Every structure is written in structure tokens, then in C-alpha cells.
Image (cartoon, rainbow, N blue to C red; front, side):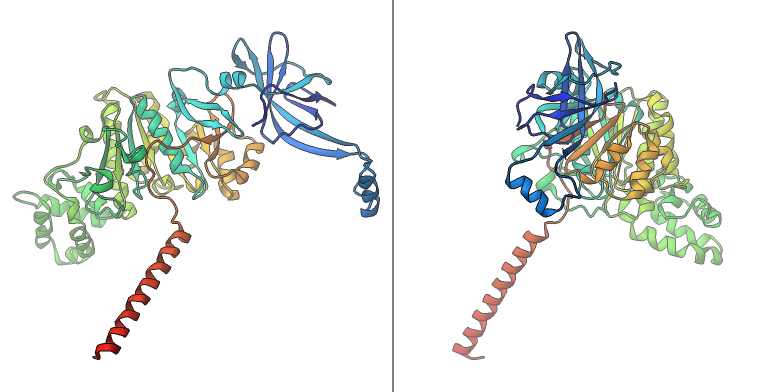
Amino acid sequence: MHESGSELGYTVGENSSEYFQFVLKPGCAIRRWEYVEISYPDHSIVGRVERIASRSDLLKDNLGYEGVERYVKNDINEIVDICTGSTLGTVENGKLTKSRYLIRPGTLVKRAGVKILTEIFNPPEEGALNVGTLIGREDVRVSVNVNGLRRHLAIVAQTGAGKSHSAGVIMEELMKKGASVIVLDPHADYVLMRQGEGGRSYSPFIRIFRTPLSTGRYSRDNVGIVEDFTLRFSDLEPDEISDIMGIKENWTNLRKIVEDMHSSMKGLKDLEDFMMSTEKIPPEDRKKISARIRFIKKIKSIFSTRTTGLKDYVSPGQLSIMDLSGMDQYLANYFSFRVINEIMDAKVSYDYEYPVFIFIEEAHNFIPPGTNTKISQTIKRIASEGRKFGVFLVVITQRPGKIDQDVLSQCNSQIILRVTNPLDKKALMDSAESISDAIIEDLSSLETGEAILVGEFVRIPIIAKIRERETKEGGGDVDIASLLIRAREERDRNISIEGDRERVKNIFGG
């Protein structure tokens, strides 16, 4: 790590209040995105290096190899390293404001010190969430302001870039603040969060709910108690039964059949009653609904004597992970709608006082463009109105180009990790004014776990290394190399065993 506050060079050429350039002092090493400082008696200007160029007036590109070689071997050369920086702001009395000062040529430029960077990126605020460190400056912690999440957050990255890791860090920080957190988890990526360092329990306020359909790769041994996420059939209205059966809202004929079956139910009004009611509808209707009846029989394990409700999964300081793995999308849509709609109703009616943060993993599957399902309607409603009632979204996706742009544009803060798809980059540009061309250009070069933080939860755009998780991570990519090693070892053991059997046969016969 280079010494902070050290001299780097002097400003040269044409400078303005937004951009400046400086010639680098011989022997100094500097990297793109490094932070620099220009000090004055009553204020300091902080900037970030966006471009580094090396120039020689002698070694022109038309000189040819032999000409260049003569200059190099005779040590005749005049190389000038020029850095171009953008102004982040002016720091006066510990506060960062938009810079309006002119930077003149011949002004000394220094590497930004820990103190001034900490004042900018990790201010001592009550609502600070610790998310990591500055890239290239592990001595400077980075925090975001929880109040910036009032207008929702998007976490965007291609597969394997660290979006679930980053989401887990935000969940940990919100739990420390006492927030109520709900996670819609389609692939059981967050179910191991109960475990902390060394396998110890991280928090007693993390609860995991799973349906009998779950295919998540975990058990009581590695997560502890897992609670049932079930429905009591008698609590369901006809429209809800149709949703569970995968009958779309515009399939009015099938929905009418379900309604007729429901109205003819007698006795306990449970699933068996519902299926028996097929005998009371016309044969042609019975034929139309038969495939859906077979499906609901197949998933009958989701029905129980009790419906999991709001008081189970919403409580101050509680993180509730709703394991949706093993479900078809429309069934996941129904369970998710039931949860977040109940939360929204409770907040609108003031039945629950405290802020609720809803994390939606694989959000592009719940709110693709042009959809008008119940789950998409509810998410859109929370995106537009939720902040008035204390319900906040964290939208997590690897395909911002395939998510409803009205919802994405309502997320006024973003954690953006590596993104390479041009359509996804364009979607990000269209969704937020704070995302500049320079930020978009750099997204492809980010390493795993590196992120650009922009929007209302930070003072200025930040390029950060997301900190290590305190909780255990689930999901993630399969380590092919290590699994192949184990496969070869098992193959060799099997060959050895088979060889032993053959030798025994030869000795004893048979």
C-alpha cells in the first residue's frame, strides 16, 4: 500500500472545476480509480484518477523499431506520465460539497489521506451500514446510509460476480439495526445464514421457512430448526386456489369451474372435499379441469392444518428466509404474493409499526417487462408507494434488461457488480441518472466482489470491495476441479476393489 498524503505531481494544461490533469512525479506508482487530494488553506478538493497516459515527444509511433532502439540504448528519452482526474467535491469543515473552485496549473497533487477519505466514505452516522473498503485502499472503510434505502435498492451482477454475497452483507447490517427482513429465496441461496464464524450460531433471530416441495440442499444438521411454510386449504378463496393450480387470470372458464367446485364443497372444506366436488360439476367441465386436479394432488403436501402468517415471519430485528426452491414459477409467485401482500396490508393499516425490507432474489422472474400478475402488481405498488408506509424493496437480479423498468427505475440506490451484457448495461443507464458513461464502461473489468455503489445511500459514486460475510453462504458455483478430483479417487477405489474381487476368484475359484 502506498503512503497516503504523499506527493504525486503538479496540475498541468487546462483544468476546470470538474476535471483536472497532472503530470506524475518520476518514480511514483498510481492506479486508475485512485483518490487524490489538492489542499488549500481553508479547504481541500478530492478527486479520482480516471485515466492514466504515458507520452514521449521523442518516441513517435512513426519512428520505426531501429530508431526507437537507438534512443532506448543510448538512454535518450523523455517520458511524461499524465493523469486525468474527476473532481468528487470540496471538503470544508469535514463536509463534502459540490466543488465550484477552479484548479490552476502548477498546483500540487497528493495521494488522498485516510482522514479525509474516511470523512467522505465512512462518516460517523447512526444509520451507517458497513459494506466494505475502497478498492485499492483497504485502510478506508466504506459505509452506506440506511435512509438512502427509503427509495429502494437494486443489486445487479452477472452470475458469479457476488450479488448474493453483497445481499447477505446488507441483510447482516440491517439485522444489526433491528430491521425486519424478508427474503424471497427461489434457490435456497440464503438458508445457511444461521451459521456464523466457526460454525457457531450467528443469530437466534434468523428463521427459515420451507415448503414440503423444497429442494434446497440443507438439513437440520447444518441449519438447525426449519419451520413449515404451509397453507390450510379452508383458508383459501377460489381465486387463490386457481393461482396455486397455475390457472392464469385470463383463463376465465377454468376459474369459473374452480369457483363452482368451491361453492359446492361440504364438511371440512379441505383438499379432499375440493377434489370430491368434481363429481358435482358437468362432465365437460370435469374433463377441462382434470389436468389441474392432477397437479394439485401432486403438490398436496403444501396443505396442512395451519396457514403460516404475518406474525410468524415479521418481527423486529428478525430475518425470515422464505425457501421457494422446488416450486414452479407460478407457485412461487403465489407464495411470494401471499407474503408481501400481507405485509403491505399490515403496513397500510398500521398494524405493524417498524420498517420492513423485502429482498427479492431472481427478481426478473417475478417482474419481467409487460407482466400484470398479482405478484408483479404488488411489487410495483411497493416500488411506487411502499416508502410512505415503511416497506422497502431490495431487488436482486442478474438480468436488469429483463426486469420491469418501472420497478428498476424506482430503485434510487444501486450496488452494481460485474456486468458485461450490453443490453443489461443499457438498462442500468436508462434506470438511473447517477450512472455515468465512465461507470458503465468499467463494469466489465470489476473483479468478483468489487462493486460500484451509486444513488441516494452514498454521497458520491463509490468503487468498493464488499467485505467478507459474517454468515455462511449458500448456493454459489460448483467447484468442478475439486469434484473431478474426488470422482477420480472414487473411480480408482472402485477399480482397486474390483481387482481384489478378481484375485479372490482366481485363488478360490467360482
